[in-house]
Length: 178
Image (tube, rainbow, N blue to C red):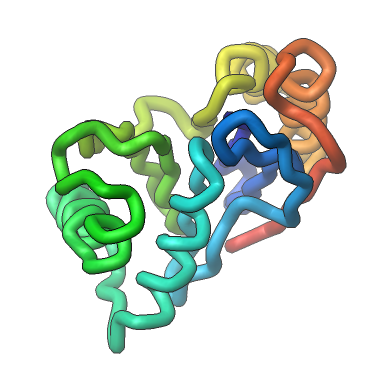
């Protein structure tokens, strides 16, 4: 897997990821693990093919509705999972347990999706997915109430996941989305 993180602090929303991806038994070095949306970003960890499928899905949809609620976030991920690419390439149908986790990040909220398409709204102003998420969440929890700027928190969380998790690696990518 790998790690993707998001935090909202001081009126800003920042995201970050490492550069490592998995494709079966192979490790790949890729760029940032997010796709920009008109209203935020979607970040994916898991088997590398799901990042490509999400990229294709976003480009194939004529209009992606602004996500303002948990119900709309669930619909976004369900429509992705039901898209032709996921069913054809992954060889599974929506709800069968897809090998990915995702964060859908807007300027005001963050939603987490697991491979079984369970979607939840993040309880805090930060969240993380992937094999390095526990380490990253620990760093973000420690620094969220400090005077540390959100970009620095994202960078430190991803670096800690890389340092302490076998399936995270490569360089750190960060981006401000609002």
